[in-house]
Image (tube, rainbow, N blue to C red; front, side, top):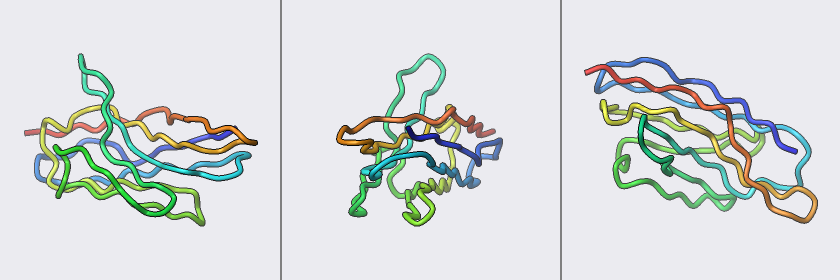
Length: 119
């Protein structure tokens, strides 16, 4: 199984920056992808950014050029650097890890961290 611990959310003024971290631990064969999703009040959870084991990344159009996802494979940790934050970025941000446990692939979720942007 995989446990995820998130940190780094909080309150920031519009135009400011935050960095989210998510550390994975547990018994797994490999981590195949790590990503961040967010869910705003009254909306569905949406993909923000994902980084795969080979280093390729994908971003939601709404965050391209402002957010950067990175990972430290030695620490099994994924980061989301969020710059030029906007009120529309307000949401609970969830870390997601896709890992191989045994011979099967599973998705694991963090507990969520609140990001609030004041205008």
